[in-house]
Amino acid sequence: MGQRLATEYVKASLQLTEAEMSKFVHSFEEQEIHSYVMVLDNGNQEVVLEDGAGEEIRLPFQRKATTYVCETSCRLVKPKLTNAMRKAVSAFKGDAIVNRIYTGYTMEYWYKQGKVSKIVEHVDGHDRLVFEYKDTVGQLQQLFRERQVERQIEQIQSEINALLDARNRSEYTEQIAEIDAQLKNCTQQLFILEA
Image 1 (tube, rainbow, N blue to C red):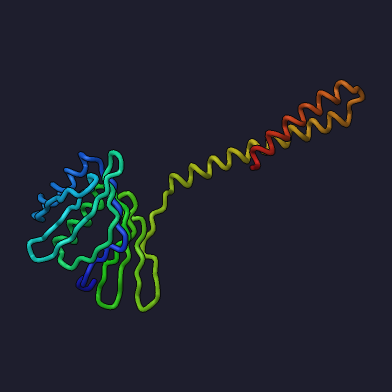
Image 2: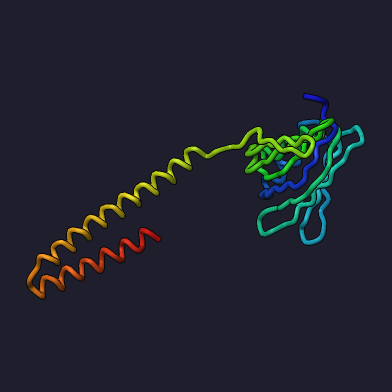
């Protein structure tokens, strides 16, 4: 892999509580990134990060009830601040679309809740999916629920067929009325399940 020219946060989103906000700021200090917080109007805050080599980013956080929400985009060149931002998005479960730009190609990373969900390589106008997270357990659970509904539908259809056979054999009006009531109930259940 070639040398990275820049890292571009096309869209980054973080949502932090007050306690997480404090941890967020301190997490950069642990990585030797100078940080300070400017308190703005309405309780909004702007976190300024400097790497000591001249690169700086400003992250605006809007106060919304009990949380701080940051939606931003930025372009980073120096590895120190780039790595610190990557770790912060991951640790604080952020969502982001990040372009890692190399000579001749770009790698696009999609983060959901701090985890990489998709990686796409862009080369000369062609896109290639490198990685995509698949929630296999969730998909299997959904499939199981769908199969369970299918089994219920089959059971009700069998019950309807048996009731129709009984209705055709019946000679008594009271018995036919009772079967019709049961058929009505079954068709309502079937309608709900098929919806």
